[in-house]
Image (cartoon, rainbow, N blue to C red; front, side, top):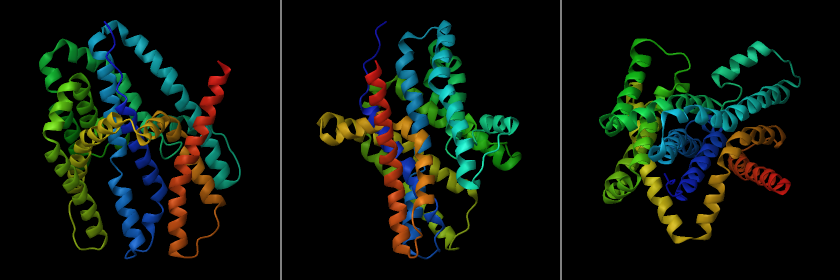
Length: 348
């Protein structure tokens, strides 16, 4: 069976997601500025409203996998699928985990000590660097994908129930973790993102219908996304000023609604951008295509910038340092990815 046409808008969605990654990591220290300053409030809002990024990348993975494989999937394809993912994801993950294990020791302690057992523990947990836990989540979904795809192909009722099943699983996982017994490395378990993967999977199977539906309810989707995002940020601000005290579930609920609504809103924006064929669309597409490399590289550049940058004696200088961190992390990583890609292409 012929493959379905490529979706150029997905690279634009990836571009927005990787920008949000840099906003989170570039502003993380600035959120610790003295409470009450305008800078701290602004960077806190930017940081927390960018938390959609990992859920959005998980959603993209679900969409792309089910969009790509649904029409041509056979159970016998599982081994080939896993082999491809080991080459594209698992091997780079091990290599970059080793890099950050050594790099962080040198940057923060000035010396390197290799403990194979400790490194293996970091590898299994995704804790060799603060951003690598995402790879652990993705690997879990890749392991589950053949089973989920086979079930979706074989059982129409399961296929049509993907979204509610994903939401129920995520809520159940959170409820058990929060109220019954804490789960080790909960935020690195697939159940903490099952709703997003399931929603992406459903959209991938029914792409044209999902796009039409989202366009028909555009106003509602954007309203829900904006209200949920504003509510989440507002609750965090009010909490830090000791004006409210809410149980954690309210924050998680607002964030979940925000993260469930934002993918379709971003997809609408990305499709309009592609249809215009503007220079911005080409720029975002190139950024999205490089997003995996940027994701892997940017923590090293942020660490180098923090170590090499001069002392910031005033709030204004700290603000400039924070803005520079985001820019250097994003564009510096992008430049290195482009140089690597160009060099690789020249060898062919």
